[in-house]
Length: 341
Ligand code: NAD
Ligand code: DAU
Image (cartoon, rainbow, N blue to C red; front, side):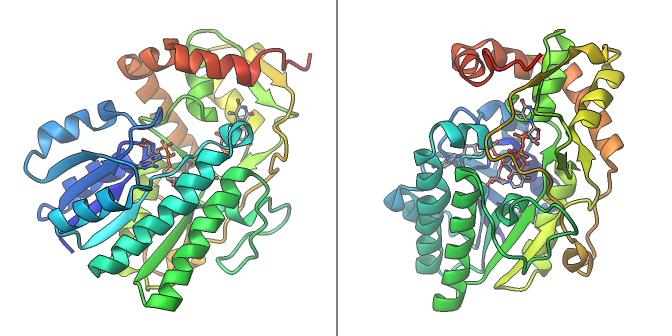
């Protein structure tokens, strides 16, 4: 494996993965293929383009465009595909599900078809713990039934099932990872942790959905990247691996910890009307990937502390996003008039 196509590599996790892989494997070449939607940003890869000239190539394109995908795979003699490309925000999937179905399901099919055509050594699909739906008790193993409840999670499950179909029907060497909530550098500030950190820095209320008792397994993005690397190299074709810390935190506690780290008052927490179909808890059984030798290196506290510090030190990255009309319009549509008290 030398030439890797990273689709969606200009997004949050994808850009962290590209940097991690180029640092770790001096003989790998990476081609990032990304549509550059609102969530994909060349700024996320600015340092990569400078540091890894010769081993890193960027191509702007849509994973739904079969002819461009095939041309890129042929031109760069791609050995492996790692697919991060997706519409990824649950709240947006409630507003406009169509683009989620298009990219997360149809786009995955286009990539699988091209991967089959070019005989790649590995196709890896980056998926999510959300496909299991809410887990009120216990933990989801990889064989747990799919109980998707949002257009986002239903689309991701569709992509996963198509991957497995290509493994069983065409012997395509596919692996899938289902990760829990990532936090860290370059996460678009619509997701809860960067939204709360950047609002708190500016003394803007933190819109907490419902009673804030929902739980998520927040993992540091580089731990997730390392887990994907382990599965890419050691995972068995046709298999699914959960990636998370195995520890869940309530949203209200996460919000209070952010405020404490920034020295801001808890009174900034503003309860707002809950997300429709809000999954109360995700919880993963991670024993299968642990057997491959992976475990997350950061506790939630460590991950959150590093993340807060990055946003404090990198206002150049998030201020232009938050002050732009695209973001402001989303924020109004999403939060205006939603306060509960
Ligand atoms: P993101 O929204 O930050 O990035 C998505 C990237 O995909 C962007 O660069 C965007 O431009 C690109 N993209 C979107 N549509 C495309 C298309 N049609 N063609 C080409 N590129 C396209 O998302 P993220 O948070 O980095 O998530 C990456 C992947 O990981 C997604 O598949 C997501 O479902 C999965 N995931 C995310 C998390 C999380 O906590 N963020 C957890 C588990 C799994
Ligand atoms: O679990 C993995 C998933 O994590 C990924 O597949 C998704 O791509 C990613 O967006 C994330 O989904 P969530 O819905 O869990 O993340 P989000 O940051 O949107 O919300 C996390 C929790 O915080 C959730 O319980 C809803 C709550 N929340 C969110 C927002 C945006 C709030 O209380 N207020 C908010 O303003």
